[in-house]
Amino acid sequence: MEHGGAEAGEEPDRDVARVREPLEEAGPRVWSRNFTLFFAARAVAKTGDGMLPVALAAGLLAHGMGASGVGLAMATFTVFFVGFVIFGGVFSDRWGARWMMVAADLVRVVTQGTAAVLFLTGHVVLWQICLIGAVNGIAAGAFQPGVASVVPRVVRDVQGANGAIRTAEALAMLIGPAVAGVLVATVSAAGVFAVHAGTYAVGALLLGLIRLREPARRRGEGPGYLADLVEGWHEFRSRTWMWSVILLWMVLMVTLWGPQIPLTSSEIILGHGAQVYGLVSAALGGGTALGGVLAMRIRPRHPLRAGTIGLFGAGVYSVTVGLGLGAPWLALGAVVSGAAMGFWGVMWMTSVQTQVPGPVLGRIHAYEVAGSVAMLPVGQALAGPVAAVLGTRTVLLAGGVATLLVGTALLALRPARELTAVSPPPPRPRDPDPSDRSSSPSG
Image (cartoon, rainbow, N blue to C red; front, side, top):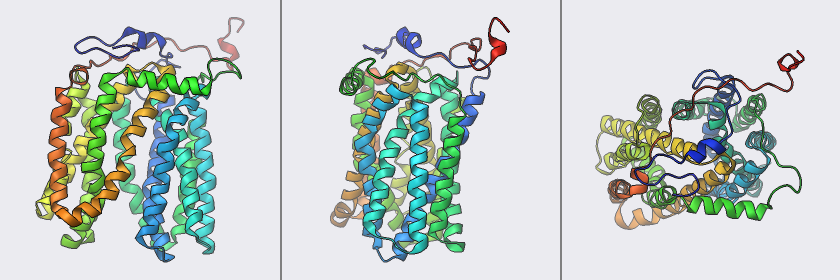
């Protein structure tokens, strides 16, 4: 495979190692100063992101906008995120991922602060909330490419770092909704939006403290934006293992992940109560954290093959709900599905980060994210109408069957199945810091 990919059964292309920027400092395989700052920024941001759905739903419902208003606000974010993330990849590779992430966080400090003021004063209009969602979607699209491209530059053990991040994100998504629920009950939805704005401010500060040489270009240097966009597409298309996985993932978005949240929530709440649904949701998050921990320990030679084997368990949660099983079985199914997704997520992200050259990583990650997320709203939109015709449980069981079929298809794809892991590079001496005069020859 060209451009840094690995043909089936071959070792990864050594060009990837040559073109990837060296780490800024030697030291621990994972917990360097830079990664610790990045890890903390992600944990804080994900905690805030976990708070948002609770605040948005509670705030809009309190103002009489109903479930359709909540859905429209969330859909606006998703549409603008998917529409902009590809351009965010171009800007990230061109201007530097870290500064794009800092700027995106600062924009969201303003938007979420504005939302807090609107809810505090009671002057809430749906179009204003949708506009804020659109700006947040664009900011998230600018932020997301950096999630992939910064990690290989701040650690030597990319898989270990991804496992730690996945575990922290899963735990944060458990803590966030709980904190939001307390704040809504004791303060108001406005208080949650204010805290959410604060998480972005903390994230921007932490990311700003990371020391990296940004590969920003000077004005007029290199090809134009359109050429960068086309180059990113060619790099993405040249990797059969990547685009074939994305195509199959789009199937899962429509058949499993899109229907899962709306259909499992209604089925469990109506059949077992809201408390059981909360416990099952916590089990799902705990399982995802478990998958991240397992991915830190298990180091397969063929990461996508191992990830796909784990992925067979992703549909267990939907199947347990579709079979109408009791609460303990629902919780167990949620743990299994969460662990499967957590493990797969680390295997996939590590493969992308270690198989793709650094100068195009932001754009390629943007293309694969756009392809993955684009079909999620389709699955969510179709879930209700299809369930009305076939039945909720039938749709959930079909999602479990689709998972098995997609997993089988992934194992049949030789480029993905035989993709070989890239070993962590050895430590290297720390590069001199231009700002540290003692590191210069003149002392």
